[in-house]
Amino acid sequence: MMPFPENSTIDVSDTLARDLLRAAESLPKYDNREFYSTELQASVLDHVRAATPDGFDELIRKIHDRIAQPPYCALIRGLGFDPGNKVFVAVNRAFGELVARPYEKPRAQLVHYIQPSTDIMSSRGGHESERLHTDTADWEPPVELISMVCVRADPAGGGRSRILDVDSIRSEVHEQLGSATLQQLESEMVPWQLATYWGGGVQWRTILTTSSVCWRRYTIDAALDSTGAKLSDEMLRSLERFENVISTTPRTLDFLMREGELLFSDNRRTIHARTPIAAGPASDRLMIRSWIRTTD
Ligand SMILES: O=C(O)CCC(=O)C(=O)O
Ligand SMILES: [Fe+2]
Image (tube, rainbow, N blue to C red; front, side):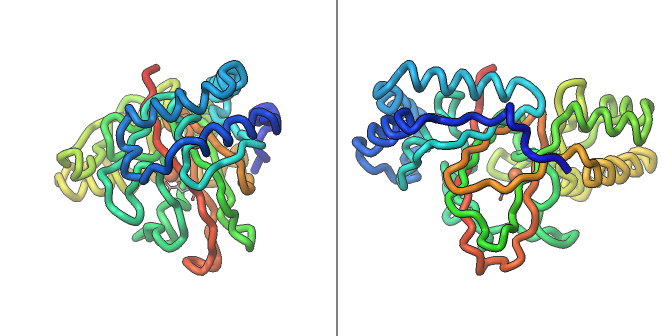
C-alpha cells in the first residue's frame, strides 16, 4: 500500500492556526444540535474568517486545489481545534452546508463523534467501517465531501486510514477484470436501499462512472433483500470480483492520522476505510467527522 502523498498535504502556519482558534474561542459555546442550522454554521464561518480573511481564503483555496486532483483528498496539518468544534465547522462551511442524519445520540449528530464503542458491526465479520466504502450511499445523492479530524489516535496504532481513488479503481478493474467488466460496472445499475429517515425506498445507480464511484455492498444487499429484486449471476460475480480487486490493490493509500490532523476526501471520487482497532471499545480513539453538501 502507499503512504499519503506529500503533495496532497497542507501545512498551516502557527500564526494562522492561532488566529482562527482565538476567533472561534471568542464565540459562545454552541450545542452540537444547534449546528444543524446552516445559518449558524455560516455565522461561525464569517466570524472565524474575519480574524484573517486572506489567510483563511488561501487555506480554503489550497484545500480545494488538492481535492480536485488525484487522489482527491487532502491532509491538513497544524490547525488548532476548540472543544466546541467551531474551527472545524468554520473550515467545513467554507465548502458547503454541513449535513447529517436526524439528531439521535450518541452517533447521529451534526458533528459526528466516531468512537470504537459506537461502531457498527458487519454481518460479514469485523466492522462496516473496515471495508472500503462510500459514506451515505443510502442517501440520494450521497454527500459530496467528507471532513474528519483526529482528536486521539488509537494508542496501539490501529484505525489506520485507507483511501482509494476512482482513477486507481478504474485502472485496476480494467487491468484485473478487463474492459467488459469495467463497462458493465459503468452501465448496469444496482439498487441502493435508502435510509428510512429519507422515506426509505430504493435508488438505482451504477457503481462506476468515468469520474465517480459509489460502493457499499451492505446497502446494495439491503435493497436486494427489501425489494426481492434480482441481479444477474454475471453481475453478482462482477460485484464479488470488484470487491476483491479493491480490497487487494496496492494502490490504496494507508496512513495513520495523528492528533490535530484534518482530512478532506471527495466522497464521489474516493472510497475509504479504517483498519481494525484491537482493543475495541476499550480504545479511546476519537475522530470527529462531518458531511458536506457542496454546490459544485
Ligand atoms: O473511523 C474512521 O477512521 C472512519 C470511519 C468511517 O469511515 C465511517 O464511520 O463511515
Ligand atoms: Fe466512512
